[in-house]
Image 1 (cartoon, rainbow, N blue to C red):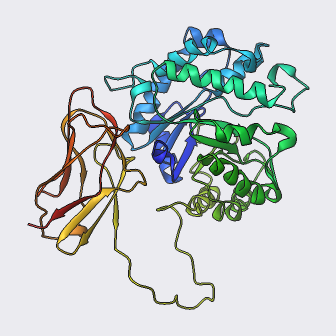
Image 2 (image 1 turned 90 degrees about the vertical axis):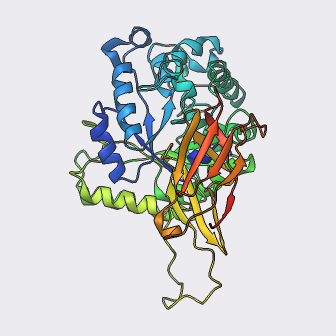
Image 3 (image 1 turned 90 degrees about the horizontal axis):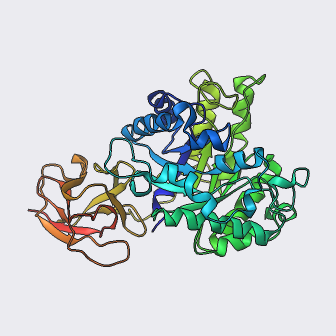
Amino acid sequence: MRTEGLRGSVQISAYGAPDGARWATQAAALGGTHMRLTNIFEESTAQAARNGGDKLGEMDNKVRAAVDAGFRIVVDFSYYRNMLIKEGTNPYFLEWPAWLSPMAQILSRQFPGADYDYAHAPEVSAVALSGEPDILWGDNNPTQQAKSPDQYLWALRQQAIAVRKLDYDGPITAGGFNHLNSDGPDRGAYGDAVDRLAAVPWVDALTFHGYDEQAKLKPGIAKFVDVAQSGGKLALMEECGFNSDNTADAARAQKFRALIPCIAASGLSGLGLWNVGDYNGYDVRATHPEAMKAWNEVVAAMPVLGRAGAAAPASGGSPSPAPAPTQWTTFAGDATPGDAFIAALEGSALCVGPRSEWGTVTVPTVGQKRLATIPPAVLGDRKPQRTIYPLLKTDGTSDGATIEVWPNRTVVTNVPANGGGKRIAPMMYAPLA
């Protein structure tokens, strides 16, 4: 599944965070899985064109530090929309060639420490089209207003075309919708744009921003998820947060905790926090221990496999006995730490494969490489026999690539030249030696 790398994700924005290693330490303490690149440039489109202040070098440095710490990357192009509006250009009336150059500046740039660009980097989980739209609202500044759902969808399609023309083939997210109500997306603000966006084939996930009050978010998030899922899309809360200026740590923690009942039964597939940085009022830092603890409680409430905690019995007593399920062990991959695997013993065989509905794994390099190591707790002193399976491309075809279970308790891939990237791995059964 294209979006499997976003399921259970926690995007942490990195605005005002030039020190990537410091960002990674703090984001990890907040349950983060992805660095969200936003506001790469802020001053002007001219500054962006000349890479004023070497902001691209700063971006590369923090991306490398984040990836080295096990994070994956989301590239968000909202910053370019913001600069266009600032300069008096309505971004919702630009055809795709106008987006090509600013997007190429990022997607065609060499990924730090690699021999491929951002568009082909397996570390990049998604590209986000410009968000926080004004469609029917926003007539106080017509330059920022799409004016109709038709025009908004046309505009997003132009951005998506530009992204694909730059040979990025991964998931695209869109939305960043700011306004929810008891019906989900506020149709007074957006008309039927969100419903129609859920149905288009060129977007993979819908996003919103969780800044409304709890009374709107609790019913609104669940209804937004329904809209997204009606078109087969994931629903992600791309960002939320609370300003720490003139607000005590405990008071901000209470605001975060108010999100927990909004998240717990929502069906959301991912969360996002604004922000971890060095000087923004919305930053969540180690000096805010109560807010950090509360945000981690929000993350724990996310209703996605491997993230939410076990539910307590409704009666307060012991849970009723149930048939014991297979005891799967979940573990991270070696080649791509963002990939997750599961393994268990089934009779006299080892069963191991990706923890993914559609079997998606990322193979960053060609040749013979170790994809994962089976934890000692699964096998003890036993060894699996060498077993070989096909490793298909994402379109279901084969180029001869294989995936193996080895007696040294590793999972190994053999990939031909130019075959790196997303692959479909099977659940593999290997008899015990």
